[in-house]
Amino acid sequence: ELLARVRTQIQLKRVWQKEMREAEELRLLHRILPYSVTTRLLHGEHLIADSFKSVTILFADIDGFHSLASELSTPNLILLLNEIFAIFDKLAEKCGVSAVATLGDCYMAAAGHDGKGDHAVRQMRFAETMLKAASKITHSNGQHVRIRIGMHTGPAYAGVVGLNSPRYCFFGETVSIANMLMINGVSSCAQLSAFCADECLKKGKWKYLPRKLQFSDGRVQDTNLLPYGSEGVRMARKESGTTKAISLGSLSMSPRSNSGQSSVESKLKLAMDEASRMRDKIRGLEDDAQSTADKLYRLRDASEIAEKRLKTIEKLDEELKSLGGLKDKQQGYVTEIDKLNDRIKTLKFERENDQEKIIELEEALSASKGKLRDTT
Image 1 (cartoon, rainbow, N blue to C red):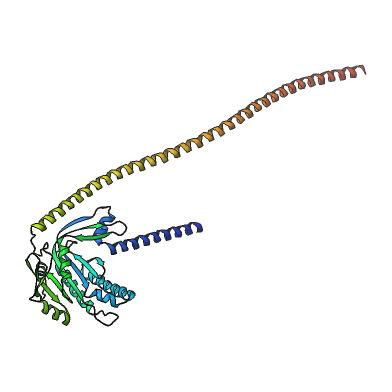
Image 2: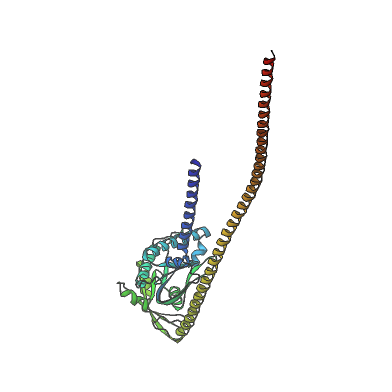
């Protein structure tokens, strides 16, 4: 009984350790991929390819990062980036947006892929908290960190790419525009496309400073600056009302697509449809494989049952052979008993004959004794 208890405790410990490992692996997976994507992967969906009508993409980087990197030692630079991105990750979780990727000093976040309609407002609140948090961080040389933010709202595509290090990546013109707004942004400010700013004003109140970007093809697009702190206000007022020339003529920040954007989106749509068909085909193949696996499992079970029955038959056969030997011994004993019975009968018969002879002799003896008495 004590040994059984020990074995039970060891088994429970192993189960608990396995559950803890699985929970840790799941926690790490949730940190790499969005929760909804992780759930789909755990349910057996291998190809994750999504198309969204409207999401809000945010890019942020450190203003003057290259000169800063040349001034700081590598350990201090890594510590600074880790501190900044750790704070951004916590703020992203608090504001309900997803941290997508980091590249150098660039930080990317997305909102709206979860199906909620207030993604522009959530990204705006995230941008405000990022600007506020960054202003409180100082370099090892005592200077404050200043960041630039670019935001745009529009259609986008997303999917899980990579095997060893899978990532849920966003792509499309909305991503390119948000990145362009960051690159051409203003220090300590968030630069929003006009459409993104309008979406934010539907559910919130923010004070923007207008700005214009002129593309190489002559088009002029309106953007909006949201400054933070005295430095941000100073820089935003300096840039407000001016027109900055950029060489990105293929991009348009209007909510409606031009012909080039339509062409790109149509190609992406075809790619997404093809990915969807491939996903359906993979699911069909998985169902066939599962059916085949079920048949193999049933055959294996039947084989194991047949093998067990064969072993039982062999055991019974051995027992029958053993019983056959006992039967032969029993028959020999019966024969020997019969012989003994016959011998007993013979002895009884001989004894009866001897008894008769004894009686005859006794009678003869009595007669002889009578004759003797008569003569005397």
